[in-house]
Length: 178
Image 1 (cartoon, helix red, strand yellow):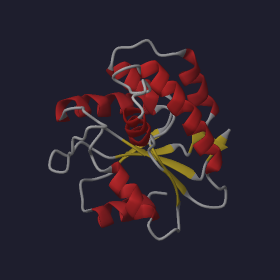
Image 2 (cartoon, one colour; image 1 turned 135 degrees about the horizontal axis):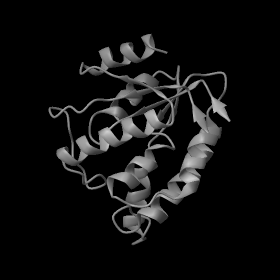
Image 3 (cartoon, one colour; image 1 turned 120 degrees about the horizontal axis):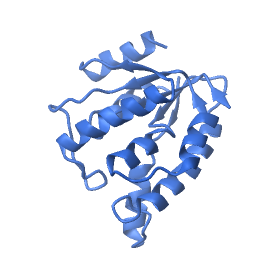
């Protein structure tokens, strides 16, 4: 199934993708599929659960996959949508941790297709933020960023790197490339 109206915005952690999506969607003109990994981690920490990537990457990604597929269908077809990460991002996270990638992640990445254009926020040390829900260092985020690009290229998406600019300029760049 294809959602040509749904664009993925992704990249390494802490490089400003969520801020960009919030800005793009603040006036309600566009639909937003939020990044749910941080919420899942926070919830699991509150209940002392194990669906946390550094405890059980497989269980965590399987739960995220279910949620991402539901979110894929939640996007209205008559409105442009921005997804904060996409289903293929899980493949990059498995690769980042040198873990065997379950076959269903490739299958679901091929079955549920976003717009062929994928926007990538580039590494940007000046805005990089490390948080408890994303403990990767800047250097680790650089590596993850590269793996994300490789994964989307492998799945035949067209990568569009967003320049390092103020948030408003970034939003204009994205809108101009839809």
